[in-house]
Image 1 (cartoon, rainbow, N blue to C red):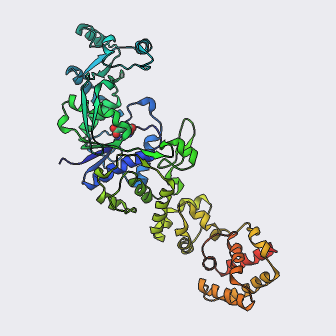
Image 2: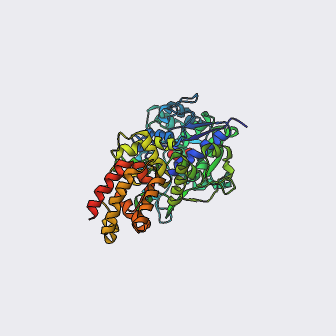
Length: 506
Ligand code: GLU
């Protein structure tokens, strides 16, 4: 088998949807599984759709996911340039070759002529007529003009495009690794523009030329490209490269609550659909990203891998290394894969539980900074992490789960204590302060022991005293076991908080 070389070929037109990341992932896993190369090619031939910042954003996303390319405009490689706008000169000769060989033609129609054709030929049955075999004979192109006329127009530098001459009533066969054999009848296809008037190729020509020149062995891309596949297959054949044609696989859609998972779903349901936050530069609209929501990249790629693939067992948690070992494109399902945000969070929780304290600490710098938590010693922070890590489903839960370790409660859930607060309870906590002063060593079990003994001596139920104690320390009815909290807060801080709360509860 020839060397595996796969590519992700995004157009820099906006944020990176999880469908795109999954395409990257499957390409990446397949490449690494076969000791091959993963190439990132930027398809920016449609300058009207180019969005500033989108290219950099794609690189940042792949970096965060740990799915970086072996070859790209950033990583180097021998098949560059890897940005199509920098390859403009390459495509023209292939367009000309296709014309010379009779598979394409020059079309000189102006925008007005095209519009007139669309208006004149519009019928109820065919509301948007296409430039196809039934129409091309009525238009101004090198098929209807004489050779001399064509040459004159070309020599005079008259604007023109090159269009593919779609054969009539032919069947094109696609052998898709996931879907099996698919047929297309060429009568449903129009004479797509291959080379534009400004000399830029369209996607169809550029993708085939580049996949060939970059020696791509397998094309794995989203199902939305299936309708374009016959055009690409014909171009591979017409350019004389059929022998080198890559293997194809069109990946299933990712489904949201109402069909294809979309940006609109993200806005409506409040879950992320992009890898990282993306702000549309035109509308200013922010689409949430998994990174900022608090997902670990390990969890993100784990659940994405399983959106459309499994290894045939019940296993759900996979490291990247395991995925590389086990992934096979044949096991990708052809049906749409349903995105379930609750399940995605479950994966994240599992991955957070698997992090060591050191690993977790390295991921929360930004959360601490965003919440103005500074100057915390490593030992103290690690004790807090040990207590709350497994309670975090998302990294961003860390603050909600731990803020009381860094800031004394500004207010108390008085509704939870007041109705049952009594002189007896106040007395208990006054005595408990004295008890705590003498507690040594200051450890959870000793604090608990002192607390329970004192309660017994006062003929009170420890269970009824623990809730007020918790509210004194954290402000509300939440958090890890209360004696563990006291142990981490330290003797002085715990006593201070109890004193302060007794006053507030009265
Ligand atoms: N440039 C196309 C895109 O934006 C690439 C499709 C393909 O992989 O052929 O997704």
